[in-house]
Length: 128
Image 1 (tube, rainbow, N blue to C red):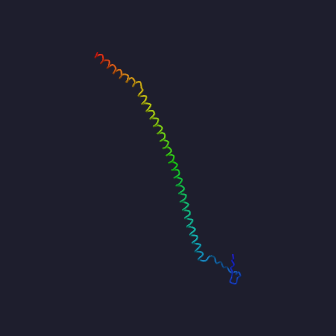
Image 2: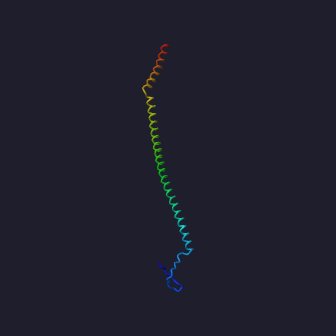
Image 3: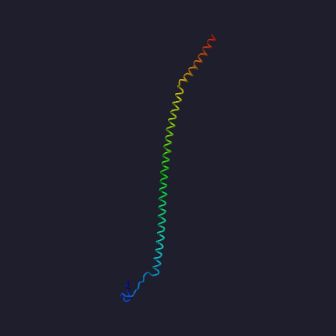
């Protein structure tokens, strides 16, 4: 279309005059576009870094949960060892008491006492 521009007299002329942007304005637009493109690139890099960081944090979270599970297992095993050792100690005390009171030990003591008594009897008979 035809554009009308003001003439010095204040009226509109019918000539085809479209000034567009001046050279300085075009340079500013070009600089703005370049800066905008650079900013977009930087924002995309930041976004990519944030996504990478989110992935690392997710992996770290999984590792922490796994480590906690392992620690729980170790703690449980330590408790079980403690219980088992205590039960073993009780069994050893019981075995020791049983061994002291066993019939075989009583028979051995009885035989020793009888041997001593017989020796005394034999010695006493030889003296008399």
